[in-house]
Image (tube, rainbow, N blue to C red; front, side, top):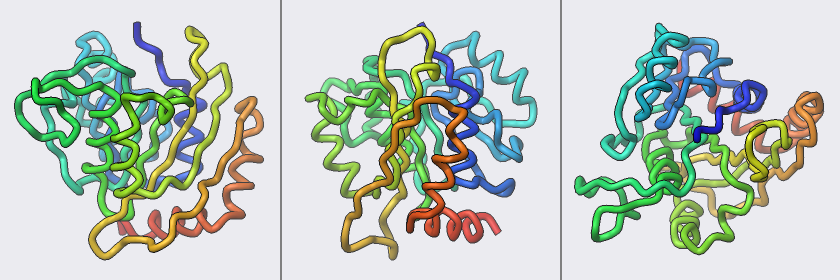
Amino acid sequence: GQFFTSLKASKLIVDILQIPDSATVLDSSCGTGRLAWHLKNKKLFTGIEFEKKAFEIAKRVLPDSLIINDSLINHDIRDSFDYVLINPPFSLQLKSMLGNFKFISYGGGILSHIAALEQAVRAVKYRGFVAAILPSNIWALESSRVFHRWLQENADEIARIRLPKETFVNTEWETTLFIFQKEGGYYRRDEKREPFIRKLDSYSEAHKLIDDFNQTDFYGLVKEYASECCS
């Protein structure tokens, strides 16, 4: 079954990234639209959702947004959005013969979380941010290791935040919020830096975590992009 994104998690993302009301935002597996809940301007939000019931709910709760009933695998989006926010389905087998994903197999198959992450990095603009809620052990899995190397070559991981157990009440999986900044074009950092790493035991501690993040150099990157990307 689906695991619906906590609205507290979506607020945490928006608050850390300081997403301005002029920003274009994509969620390629948007479910009922919960990651968009705290966006200031939902008219600039685009959501893609394959499951019909979730799509219909998203259309109702986000009437000003563009919600598309389709699989993310059918969309080849490049350098188009200021931010991409995803909580993708994990380890589902998707299939496409369009050839629009690097990590698709010869038979056209690709795991859903790999497809969503690859699409997110391709879809966001240079210097733009991708926020992804994923199982905490994702990079230890054999199925993710080759993709992880590609991800490290194309984006900087700036934050890794272990989320509280209350984020998904119907599962024992530990989940982490990963935040990446896209490299490419004129923007490429010579040296990789260790990301901001924290464990959030309760969302009541989110303000303290954000205060800590705002004391790092990464805060400058976030603030600069938010002021420049959408003006």
